[in-house]
Image (cartoon, rainbow, N blue to C red; front, side, top):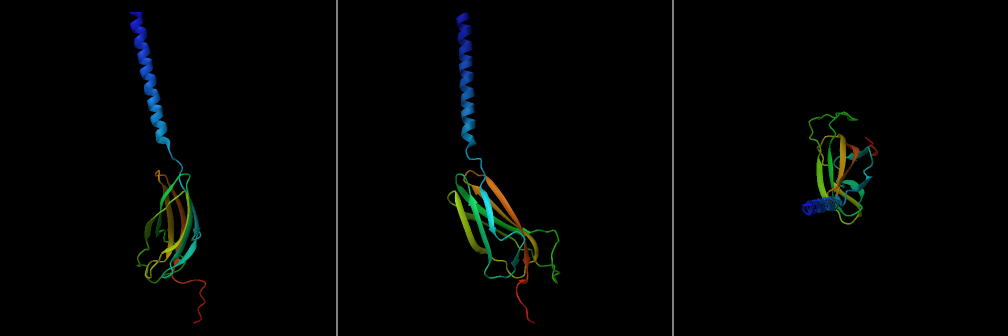
Length: 161
């Protein structure tokens, strides 16, 4: 009887040890890449004044990096909605400007520069948020944001009327 009791304890301990190792191995397999990408917005600058109706478009420049592999980034521009503007506008009923677009990234470091953001005539001037999201191939995501202002006239433009 003692032999059966000792053997059943050994079998139980062996089985329990096997289960413990299997669970630990599964947990370590799921760890993988847990580091979020890094976003560095170069342009536009914080509190930049962006001209409504500029056919050339807004210069967007950023650097993205990740320890493993980048996947994509998204630009989202939306009205700040706090009612704060620097100028008085005759038509407060203008629609708010909104922009959302995603782009693909490759490698572990990429710098992008483009003028894909065109702010059309007839949108509401004022305070907006420019938000950039970046994700890597493991699904980790980072966010960076800038406050910007959409303006109707270039303050550097000399008007001789």
